[in-house]
Image (cartoon, rainbow, N blue to C red; front, top):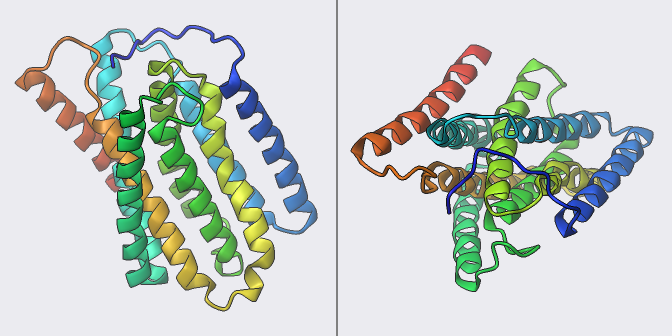
Length: 273
């Protein structure tokens, strides 16, 4: 499906209403988290939500030529791949390599199944028939569950943690917003995955102290979320271009854009030490 570079305001619809409802629930959950002393959960969840929102706003900028929009879409897909492999996956493997790898494989399989199911049933324009949106929401919920399980083991809040969150949430918000627009859906649906981290992390963190196997379980959840995230990044990086060009030059340009996104995350990871 071709993707337009011009954004038109969408009338209130189910996506918008549900998105606003999720944002309201997220705000109440974060207020409750602060009252309950879950400061790290509040900060991590808020940074992640704001990063995805910022990415969605960037997607609304006038991009000019369609070819430029195609390149930026692939840069975002590459950045998501790089962030998943360089920031998220090592953390999961540090918890428990076997369970993290198992979760990764399951996440990739679930992502592929969601994609085929939505294609087969032609539900991409319905409320719950958008594979990338569902996959990113499940990814965020899985990451939130892992954060909640490991609340007492989480490192102190600092620059590295903030950069790691922004590095994968911002391009994800951009790519998701672009895809939603291409499928005729409201960008407010970005609120689903943006808020899912906090909405999942808070309740899990409140009971995680009674789970002696929390790190191992968290590794499985984190691996699952990474697998889903990688699947979505591949989908973003390989979406057919909006332009009529589909020659070797266009393919090479797209591959270079994906590589540029990956290398940007590699350089960021290297700079963080």
